[in-house]
Every structure is written in structure tokens, then in C-alpha cells.
Length: 155
Image (tube, rainbow, N blue to C red; front, side, top):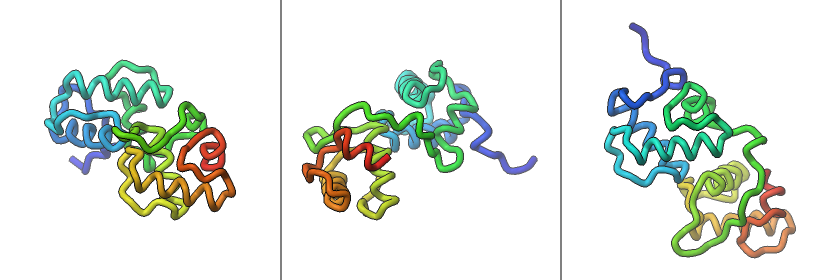
């Protein structure tokens, strides 16, 4: 048998624990999974998969289809422009805002050299500072808030 291609091979509920842990780590990186990395495809994992599917425009069943797996892991997991519509303002607050939109903003800021910190899908002080630097460079009102104007400049 050859080496498995994990991009094409979906992790289904009955799959091995190591593959489910990999899925849980990826969902956590997107800010969707907050449970233990236990390798069990339980309710929390299924709900996180459903959230990702809904956000990515994939029919949501909570099960890992090849399409869902590819959106999470394939080709650097780059989401197409149809998923980059502005949905909410992002700002620094406690607890930190988190989610896919924060992750996408961090990705864009990092690619443009404004964010040096780890991309963790949480809008913390490093992201706030990077947004302010981006706003200054783009001559947008410097408030550290990712509103429609800042969002559109990023995407």
C-alpha cells in the first residue's frame, strides 16, 4: 500500500483517533472547536464540522465529506472569494472575538507583513496592533476595528 493522501481521504466518525485529532486541531485553528483533542468524533466535533460547513457553503451534515475535508486541509485551505463577505465588525474586547472571519483577517495581515504573531483565530492585542498598522498604511481611520472599510481593503 502506498502513502495515504489525507486531503482526499475524509475523516469519518468511525475513523482512527489520530485522524480525528488532526481534524479537531484544524477546527480549533479556525476557532470552531473548543473541546479536548481526544480523537473522538463526538457531539462537539460534529457541531464544529457543521459550523465550518455552514460558513463555507458546503451542505452541512456534520460528517466529513471529501468536499469538507478539502476545504479544511487542501491547497492550503484557501477559501474562495465567495466566502469573504463582510459579516460583522471585529474589535479588541474581553473575551477575545474569535472565528473564521478573525482567522481570515489574520491570514491577510500576515501575508502583507502586518501580523508577525501566531494565527490563532482570536482577535487579541497582536491582531489589534496589526489592524491599526494596516489602517495607517491604507490611510483608513486608525481605530483597530475591522469594519466594512477595513474589511474591503483587506479582501
